Image (cartoon, rainbow, N blue to C red; front, top):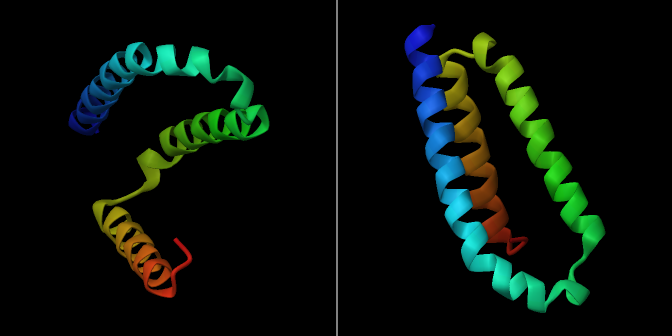
Length: 88
């Protein structure tokens, strides 16, 4: 319960700090290449990130560690197959 929430909060805080440090690095090159951006893809990525954060927060309470391990295992296997097949 409470411990898991603290861990998630700390991980999110670290991620935000890392992302903020990246903004400074990327903002210069982004300003120079703004005319080349695919704004539709950027919008889809931002919306997907918010949707993932919302759904993750909503279903985090319902998942057990076994569920998380099973999901990670299946996704790792799928990525491995895609790499072997040359899809990614």
